[in-house]
Length: 323
Image 1: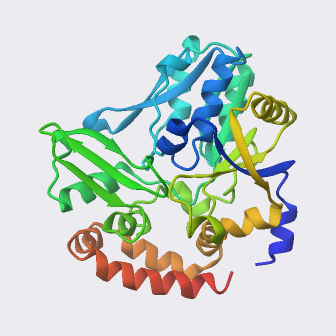
Image 2: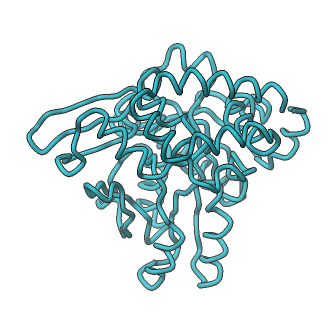
């Protein structure tokens, strides 16, 4: 992979490492609390009249709903299962007040922007930098392996409350569980490829270049070795985003730690890029993945996730070397 050529494709105007000035929002966020702070700021300054938020609903996991003020905003960290956001917006188009704030995945940005423009709704869109999105079955199977009945769960949160944090579960009887986002069985489920959405194997946009902002974790050594609270990498993609960032900074809603280059941003997310390149270019890797995604192999994985993790990790790094 020619990194210099890949970096040239990134259209970003500026890229910052920053965090929310609000300590509660910063700690409660997936990484630095920028998206929640931005959403709240846009409501507080009258720049938006509606937004899409999410709520945990038991067996259905997370569902979107429309809010019309910052007092309705629920901070949830990240969502690690597919949500048909475009379908939800189409079904609720008459309830959307313009301008609207929407957080989505790179693969959803272009279609959502087109839908909003078609209906004359001004939009401010944030894309979360994305390596993969999962089917709900990943969460269901993982909880089943941990002997947790999803119908007994009162609260489930995939991220937030420190960085990089992990899955946090509270049952209706008060029992609580925590599974780290790194070095745990949940991490094995996330990276198994068994539960990837089919479209993820064809995705070529890791960074969400069609959004106003692109936001990610700061996977750089100076952060992941020391930070346990949270920072956000925020790429500014539009003139609209530039003005908002300046306003947030002037009103002390965010603290900028440093400005970074496109190359450093790209390299901080290179594992996600390499995985997608391997999906795209490695014929034999695709063959192995098809085997992994069969019902028989899925049953094997749920019994022996550590065995699969070792097999898949070796295969993945072998094929990544050739992209």
